[in-house]
Amino acid sequence: MSLRVVRIAVLLCLPATVTAQDKFEGVVTARMSAVGGRGGVATYAVKGDRLRMDMAGETGAVVTVLHDPSKNLNVMLMHQQKMVLDVTSMQGAKAAAAAKKPTIKLTGKKETIAGRECEHALVKSDDGGQLDVCLAKGMGEFVMGSGSAGGSSPALASTSEVLSKLGADAFPLKVMDVKTGATVFLVKTIEKKRLDDALFAIPDGYQKIDMRRLGRPGL
Image 1 (cartoon, one colour):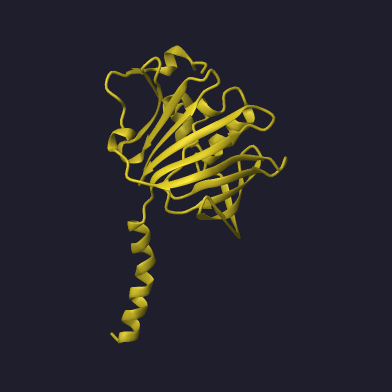
Image 2: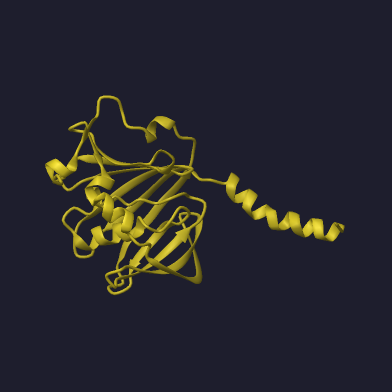
């Protein structure tokens, strides 16, 4: 094998190696805004593939969404009641399994938001809605948490469902509703820092609730 071929092989392997070592760890804050409705500020703790989202619901009570693909964990914590809700069971196991990923078309347009580069993509949902989403790589899998953020707003709940199906390496930094031109999600700060593993685990003393029996709670 010639030296030139070896160099080309090394160069081809480099991007994958760098990406694997460059998994994001830190805290992201973002502003959510329902079209014609209420919104709020969400705080995301990200450590590789694990994600934690903290946000106040409509009553002001703080709820947390924990997402860990390696442990098949996708739950919501209601801290005042010390309750754990399985988000997958709320959506319905069959519906979640049959859910289709939205159609994503990269536009080539790039932007820097909170110091991190992202690429704009047009994202279409099954109901015909369209979002302009600026996607960042290397920040893990994204979960918006419609139960805590959306409240009674169908628009934000629908957006949440679409964004939570983007894939393992597509973190939105900015989301615009194409029809209205409104920005419904915008990352304000990104801080790289070491995070405690305990942030991504269910706290001791929390009771798991079967939502198929109780029905969906109001937040």
